[in-house]
Length: 132
Image (cartoon, rainbow, N blue to C red; front, side):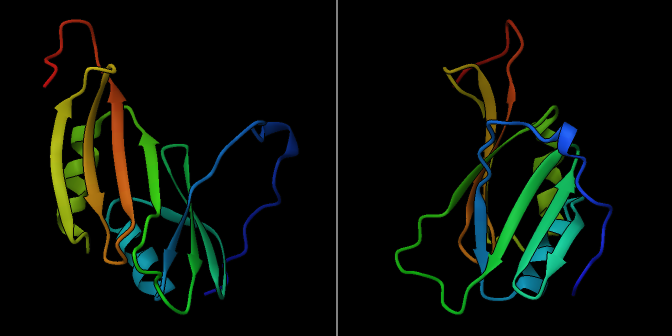
């Protein structure tokens, strides 16, 4: 599953930057799940993959065992949370919670993937949007 891509453009790398790393016992299944919602593989190796969609980088690391209890989370800030939530309908996500407005100014949904990774996907609220 090795994918070769263009070298990094060091001038375009944001610093500082925090990147969540999701885990998976089956990297092919994990990348297939994320491909179902529009991610493409940017770089991959036998035990690690970097995927991209709409300027968002998602890192996945292969592990032999999923730790219990597991607490791996990510937050994806996007322009259209509804579109992302709908995309997860065709993925291997095990659970989804629909988008709603939050008092901190974001509209967010939640997804738990087949490995138990918890992702919050949010977009900034516009003035006058409902908050729940």
